[in-house]
Image 1 (spheres, helix red, strand yellow):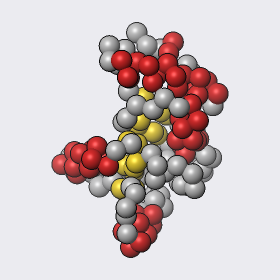
Image 2 (tube, helix red, strand yellow; image 1 turned 90 degrees about the horizontal axis):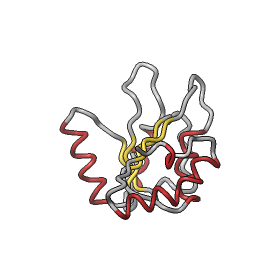
Image 3 (tube, rainbow, N blue to C red; image 1 turned 90 degrees about the vertical axis):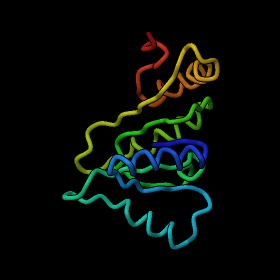
Image 4 (spheres, rainbow, N blue to C red; image 1 turned 60 degrees about the horizontal axis):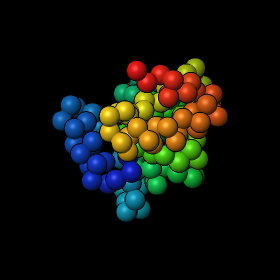
Length: 138
């Protein structure tokens, strides 16, 4: 799950915790020990719970690698095609047993910023092999 804002991240994590989930949290400003502990939790365990990561976009930008991830929830609007390609690239990496990758992208055609950001990032989806979400909007 990816957002751009730390306050939003905190609310998402709190909601997940209330529902019994323990996400790996990755955000700017983490100390060395907490960052190392979080990164150690990124190793998938076949007998463990699914890997759930909540992060800020800047943190998982360049240099982040966790090929076991197969699903991305964009919890904040982004418009720049390059950023979309970078974020989606995190779940497109090959990994043993992974056969699909999904992006859940939230938009609202009645809300200006959400509608316009979808229009701007649509070409990014097609450039990496996903259907054009602008054609899926009802």
